[in-house]
Image (cartoon, rainbow, N blue to C red):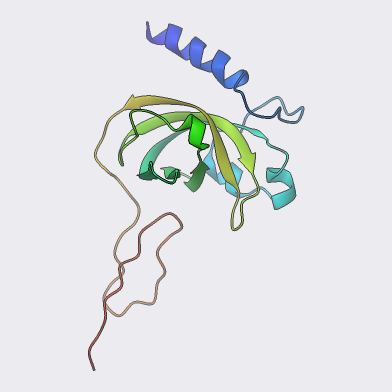
Length: 149
């Protein structure tokens, strides 16, 4: 049965109801490849199929971040395509979509989503040492403490 699901997912990913991508045959398979695109390249709506872990999802506004071993990326979810049930931090997903330029970094516009497994939130986001000026990585929550003088 799992092989049937894989073939079905591949067929759906190829025919997702998003604007047609350029003639590029091979989809991007790592988040680092998406993040390395220039705004003009990302605007070409290049196909993307990745396996990644959810780090944050807000179903109200469609805010969605995932990460793989190469980095993290924002997933834009159209209101009519919001997944149900909503993915939770730690869930491992297979995502298919196309790239977009974004305001800050390239993003992925979600076409299809398959939940591979549930999991505990795992993140490379760690709290900086006390007194450190290190910034939190993209897609991570930053915790600020107010010091009294």
